[in-house]
Amino acid sequence: MGTFEQQLANISDFIWGWPLMILLVGGGIFLTLRLGFFQFRIFPHMLKETFGKIFTKSEGDGTVSPFQATTAALASTIGAANIVGVPVAIALGGPGAIFWMWLVAMIGMATKYAEVVLGVKYRTKNAEGEWVGGPMYYIEQGLGWKWLAWCFAFFLMIEIVASSMVQSHSLSTNIEVAFHIPPFVTGIIIAIVIGLITIGGIKRIGSITERFIPLMVGLYLICALIVIVANWSEVPHAFALIFTHAFAPAPAVGGFAGAGIAMAIRWGLARGLYSNEAGMGTASIAHATAKTDHPAKQGLWGIFEVAIDTLVVCTMTALIVLTSGVWKDVPSEDASTMVVRALSDVVGGHAAGIVISICLFFFALSTIGVIVYYGEKQAEFLFGTMASHVMRFVYLGAIIVGAIGGLQFIWQFLDIMLALVVLPNIIALLFLSGEVKTITQDYLMRLKQ
Image (cartoon, rainbow, N blue to C red; front, top):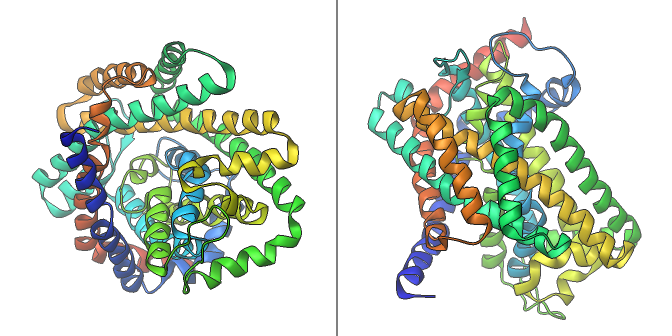
């Protein structure tokens, strides 16, 4: 790695170390306290209003159903971060990292809830008659800080160029290994599919994600259950490891080098934040399109989203890794292969590789489609509807270039750009927390009537 690339990597590692973790976790704690631990008090009601009403026709203004908006938002979070990120957290932070991942998820529910509430409150109709919203709108209209809204939109628009390339490269590499298809061919196919999806806007994206995301999550959870059932006697021990090493160092064993409490906290928080994206603000762009008659009602779907992503899917991945014992056998540099290794011990290596490859393929494909939509909405906010169409072709080109591993120096800016997206959003959430509280109180009063 050259000097310039190394400097960028050092800057990125520093920013996404304790500084941003303190900011994101601190912001989540502040919102949790200000809302009176709302995400915990309302949890049973949240399940009733979300999971219990998936097939119920919603009332109010909007472009897509609440469930479609949620699956669109989930499409950008569920995937590699759950299947690959969790084993990495265990490999570097030990089993105790999972406890801290759970903790940051429960705190992040308040953050995601606030983002969605503000996204719906400050949404507006665009020139094509669709509802649009997100941090750029609630920063501009709620705070009156147009310059900060512009910064958020600009940096996210650019960040998605790099993000599309990284996702495409990961997908094409995986397909090449599993099915021997050249990366360039995969890149063209991905670009064509994404172009067909995004040309239909959020309606087409929502109609696709509401089918594929539950299907892919279900398939992955079945794979997880196969491994867990095969190692059922190790489940109590796995939970014991999680709770014990959240507060005590994890000693070296087998290929695991050991980890202290600080490493468990650092990697648990980092992977948890990265997995559910609470604090990034991007989910509110999808949720702002939902048909709803109250911002807080859609906010409940934000809480649901974090619960599914981290408390369900990430936990199942952790149990795969811990009950099978692969975390003790596989070195940290190969942590991303732990899930496949664990599944292959039960169903065979070839079958395991194909199943996980299929899951990652559809997860990554849906992720790319949603983030391209996010990028288009930033261009629309900054420069108008025509600019959003132009950026679509820029993103499609980036997908092809990324698939073959081109312009990798741009990837070095990914995490830094992401930090420049998170900062304006967290500032807005803190300053607008009073409005979130007022909206929440209004919703709770309506429930009592």
